[in-house]
Image (cartoon, rainbow, N blue to C red; front, side):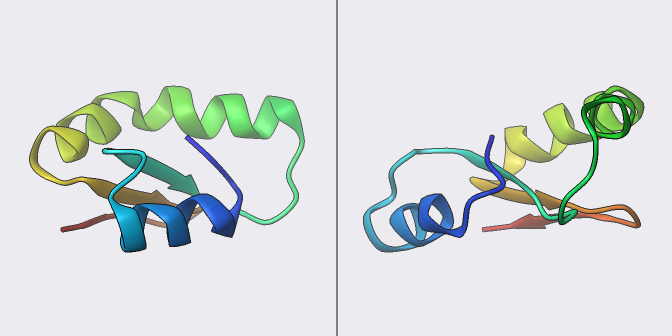
Length: 65
């Protein structure tokens, strides 16, 4: 899990890390981040079962492959 685009580039170019969750929310507080992840944990887990790269923001979850 990352908020850093460098990990996205590494994943896209070299496949490392093998699976990646990108949190694309901009700057948010820890409490808001925790709430976002807790509220979407099942959706994130399901998405990562079928995709290698998943992106979440305030409004949606996107599975890329």
